[in-house]
Each structure stands twice: as C-alpha cells, then as structure tokens.
Length: 315
Image 1 (cartoon, rainbow, N blue to C red):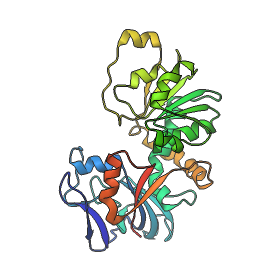
Image 2: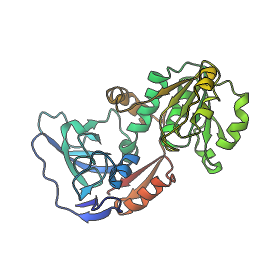
Image 3: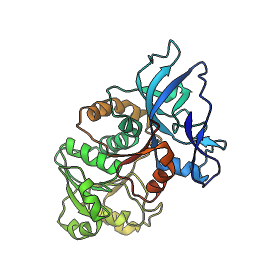
Image 4: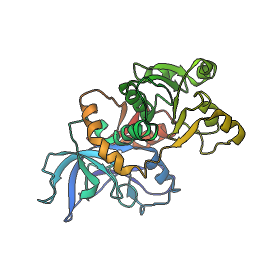
C-alpha cells in the first residue's frame, strides 16, 4: 500500500510502500479517495506543533473515502462515502495520505449527500468556518454591505458565497491582480491596493478578515462606526498593534472566530453545507495532486500558490 510519510521534522515527505492496515475492533477500514493538504499539516510537519506523532508518520489530518469494513453496529455499510476527521489523524496517529486507513469510529462521518472526493476531503474547514463567522459571530443581516478580505482563498471564497446567499452586498478583496477572477460571481472584486482608495466610498457594516497581521486595524476602518470586524485568520502575521483612543473613536467591534471551541457547532451545520455543495449552490476550488506529488503540494501551500484547497489523490 502506498502512503506518504514524514521521516524527520522539517523535511519533505516521502512516498513509501507500507503493509496493509489491519482493522481493530471499533475501527473502520476506509478506502481513501482524497486526502486534504492543510496549513495544520504543514505546521505539524515542521515539528513546531504541540502535538507530534512518532516519526515516521503518515500525514493528513482530514480526508474522504468509502467504507470497506466496520463493526456491525457502526451504522456504516460498505460503500458509504465518508469524511475522515478527528481521532488524532495526522496528529497522534497516521493520517489520510495513504491508499487505505483503519481509523476510530468517531473520526468517520457519513456524508449527507454525494460529493466529489476532492471536495469531500477539504470542504469542512472553509465551509463551516464561513458559516460560523457570518451567522453565529457576526450575525449577518440581509442587505448588509460586507467586505471580505482574502476573498480568493478557500475560506474567503466560502464567506463571499454564503454572505451573498444571506442577501448581503459583498466586496471581495484580494492581494494580487491574478486573484480577481477567483472571487465568486456576484461580488465586486478589488485588490488590496485599490481597496485603500475605494474604502472611503463604502458603507460597509461588516468586515470579514482572513489575513490578520499588522494591517488588520487599518482595514477595520473600512467599516462604518458601530460595525463589526470578524477576524478568522492570521496568514499575514500573528500580531497587531492597537491604539486604544483611535479604536474607541472608530467604534468597530473586533470579533474573533475560534473554530476549536466551535467544533460541535461546525459539525451541526455541516450536513446542510454538504447538501448545498452537492446541489451546486456552494462551490469549492480544489487543486489535485497525486500521492507522489505531496512535496509539491506542500510547497505550493506554503507559498500561497494553491487555488482553493489542495488534495492528494491516492488513485
């Protein structure tokens, strides 16, 4: 069986030939159809994360597949399409970058509707994060003017689509000219440079920011007084300086999205999001790589050159 493993921290992964997994009682044997490649995978592989699997280990904290074998009382018949997530996958035990895996039942979730394997392996984080950010944290209202920063990324594009579906008027902000075409249809697409000049013309009441970094507070001023700035990520940097007198005058609430605490809520809303993806109401861009191309997928991820989500296809 082919699998992609890390043999040392900070090194490129290697495609290895491993013995077939043996299913233990309480586990589910799954034919992997796609393994997601995420920033968490890259962080763990660097050796800097608090949780470290024993080396060598198979990467992949999420994925998708079809059930091959399970306990009679598992509720998972052979052939069921499932999402693989949790249970220590890629963190405390071997992950999804393999042709087959045997995992704990709690790490296996049947899909409410059929999805393309690449989408099934990678939709959960962007789709549920967007939902929680808009509906639970920001409490978006119909006819709001919303600005989404990082609108070409997987999470940002999901925020744009779900905000439009909620009846908002959306401006999607991207970092580069070549990303304008990746902003979902229905939103006005502008670059960060252009946004600086256009912001004074906006009447936005909500900013959803996936970049973070030192520019966050400046971008929060694109929102009118009494508005909200929802912060999802920090790919542009983990630190920001806040001048309290100015912030108090701006009167824009900074609202964090903590998806670790929101995991239960994410699972609650995921079924409806799966149906919306299956019916084409929502879309997720993915770039597909063979297992042997795992180093290239990770490199593209780290350089910010993945369109949407990256996935490894064992087939």
